[in-house]
Length: 460
Ligand code: C2O
Ligand code: CU
Ligand code: CU
Image (tube, rainbow, N blue to C red; front, side, top):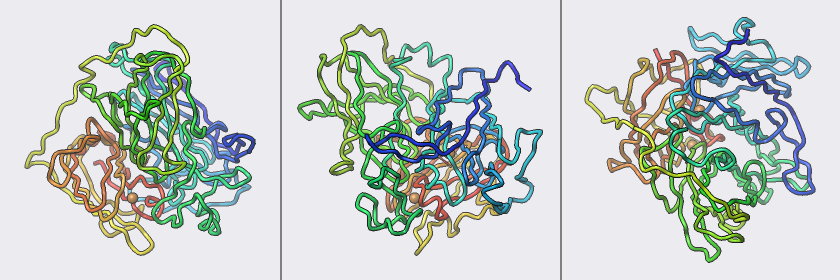
């Protein structure tokens, strides 16, 4: 049954062939056969229903990263869409008491399909969807199961920011390739630990030596002499980047940051570089008005070396007029100040011998680390003995402090993923949504997540 306030998308998850490295064919797992998958656009006042069909040989789970989502559409790691029966039976995973999983045809859940329902989102921002299958998220995302989900609102439309063909999502992801063009992912083949370009130990996270942007290696984008809005997402499994823009004389020209994970900042923020950990989004404007046709601007990665030190290039190809602007006020962001009444919790992220733990546990679907009241705001301190991008579902966060000091240059705005460096204590104010149920928080280094660094919380 279709309703008029809802937009419907249909996605088939399937094996496909892509040409990523010129002249070679790469087998991928794609949403509708492409990597990245199709971009889903959610307009003001609209509900989006995405009907997914699993045509892959393994169970899958779709998570809307950054979404404010009812629990049964959030992509809980054991809420599987099962593969065709010919691929065998997959064991039912344990459920948390009172939180059933399984098939429910009335709710659009059958063995091989599932309707994910996304109500209107509270922020106009850059969300993304990706696979979230327990223990296998890293491998599945690496093979291509990731796409953008962009949300708009009316206020944002009235600002005059670059739009249409000048509002461009950029999904950055590193991959390693075998000589036949296939993706190298260590867990799929232990022999690969000795392959150049693949980091030796997958324990710390898998990194490749080829930087892809929207599925293309080190692409060159032709631009007009105009402002462009780029929604930069780091969809890499484990790599953190420090992005900078350099003109042909290698001078750093900087970005204007206008948004974070969950939407626009209060005001534009000049940034010389952008540090972006796994799953973070930075919305930036680059003004190519200052250049002439033929000029080149390179996006580099100051944390990389050799092939990973370059991300992509812009070539100014056409002189045009440009009526876009970046107003000095972008949105209203209410500050959250800690109060004594707020519940405080500490989450210890720890590296064990062959696992990654939170408060001493590897992920246990039956255990809740925190029960939080719907709509409440809590103060969580993340303590870590390694560096991790901390991510939480169905909530939005402000960074309150780092090691007791003021937040850093990349902590502005509403976030769902916050980088925690080794030995650091990061205090976060977390505002939970009013959707009740079981959700997860985890490290967004996908290999850490798969090796246990994830926990449940319940909104009650
Ligand atoms: Cu982007 Cu729980 O994940
Ligand atoms: Cu998420
Ligand atoms: Cu981690």
